[in-house]
Length: 361
Image 1 (cartoon, rainbow, N blue to C red):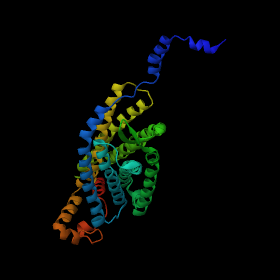
Image 2 (cartoon, one colour):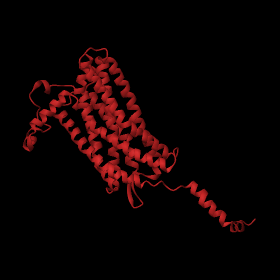
Image 3 (spheres, helix red, strand yellow):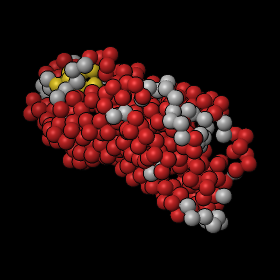
Image 4 (cartoon, helix red, strand yellow):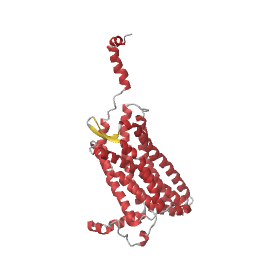
């Protein structure tokens, strides 16, 4: 049988039909999202810059107060310092993402990898230290005797170093697989196409390590704390419970929508969910919920410090000492001694931890 003859006599009409319908169904055109990009270009840059400014200011004040007044004399202070550093690391990536949202990636391949990695390290380390602070409060209130031996500065430093190691390790895919590429005249900084499986695994990792595990640990710790405080008759109990409630609600409220949307976007990558309209809606939702989650790094100083009376006192003292640029240089150095008023300067526990332990006694 002559296969060449058979091929030559194929009806061209049938070939066109096959190409137009069957091949088109097998290889659909990519979903165009220009409207999503335009929306993000208007909405995200100003929000990212506001988060950057407030996050930088608030967390820098936290670091300054910890060094100038607190002197890292407890495990809680060590965790608070590391949490502030995590948030500072996180917000330092926001100006790059703000410009990227407004235009395109113009900073080159090296910064694409580094900024993506810094963003992930700040993200994971911040959530891990919030989780560690929940465990710290749990030990201080529910297991008071054991906490006297376990909650030391040395253990706090060791655990913090281990936490940074874990955060850096789980963020490595962002460093290894982020790249720059041009599509439609637009330069992107994203995961490479052949690293799609790593993009999916990274998204699942964010869901598990960024929400599910921390939420489970926080809910367990704070439920036990509230149960313990209910058996105490103390006028500060109500304030302590409100503060605990604020910690849990803010964390879940700001991060849960983003994690749910990220999970749905992962289902799109796996082609479990299909349809261009659904992809566009998820793209809008991902931008909005991610921006909402970013705001949380500005709230950590408020939650852990600004609600405490002693921290407000420290801030008042700081601004009183720092009137004008000469006074700032003269009085506000991190290596200078703190103010001579003994009651506030000798305080050895973090503000929130002190109030919670008062409520437990």
